Length: 206
Ligand code: GRF
Image (tube, rainbow, N blue to C red; front, top):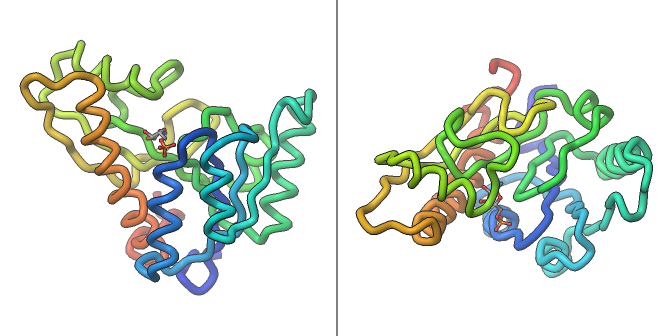
């Protein structure tokens, strides 16, 4: 089914602070992003992401490996929740776990992630949080940035659908770079979803 603002029901997965989730929920509530937030799932029962979802009136669920020690049972529970919520696009916003094969198969080509660097550089296992920005500075790169990409079974792989560059500044620390990159994440993710809803990006053509 072609995604459009008439039918886009998003399921979010997030693990921690959820500042990207907040930027997206804010864009939805102002109408700048004309889609529905159908459910927020977190593997972390105490995450800000779940609090932010509840504050926005979005169903919020904790589903984790603590509740389902069998990874396949967790995969099934996540898939069931997404389907029961009518989700047709899965948006990862700082989700620190790998999705299981059932969800990946059911939502093939319909799972997005955001990464705080210019993929394919500085992605892959272990490249999360501050480690990404440390790697950019250690490599002497003149620019970093933000990538929104489709998710497949590998970390930070799958076609990039939107990118924005963030120049590295003299005297940057991993923390200062992280802050500037995060500010761009909060712009690029809502804008990319808006373009999908508007038919300007067709996920089936990637
Ligand atoms: C972001 O830097 C995002 O790119 C990465 O995880 C971080 C999540 O931050 N995938 P937040 O929870 O949205 O504040």
